[in-house]
Image 1 (cartoon, rainbow, N blue to C red):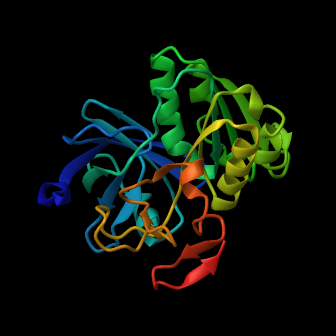
Image 2 (image 1 turned 45 degrees about the vertical axis):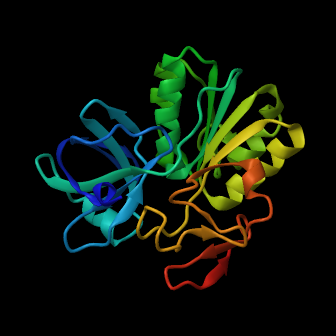
Length: 264
């Protein structure tokens, strides 16, 4: 277990502005290959360690797509080519992309990161894939062109109607979701809960990548537990099947770093 706590030193070799306040970092690092949906723990000296799910991992190049939403991620946005970053992992359970049939990937905001990685692997395996992505506005959409270039059918939704369907991505996909055999989703919890409900109703196999406050990343501290079942997001997840989440506080409460539960 101690080996899993070891930091790998990475060097930034390229940065890309993907969308408003969202940037990708291509990092050269020697570490175990990450499966789509797994996460890494990323540390910058002087800042809090944070979990990030890669948007790509090929050989020694790891791509982390980062939204500037907190002190650590805002500091990351100041990094340049040549700067070092400390990474441990990968951790957790990723997406199972070995099922037969057609796949619908549903992304909300920067939840698109692990899904574009899964999409790439699915297309490499010759699978039929559709990519449904939603954001508040067109300036915040992620990986639309990349998904098209990989051969996926793309559906776009924006809250303000600046591109594609006007409204939430869950509203957009409700008419097509039963046409698919498998759904992979990542995004805000309210969105994921709605996806879970639709998949359970239509009997579509559903895997959801969910977010909780993660400290250790290896199942020791319990800060990311889903009550009352005690499922650990960092170890049993972060990808869960819809059926596993039934009867938990998923979609109802979110545990803050202080331990206080806040309604979703």
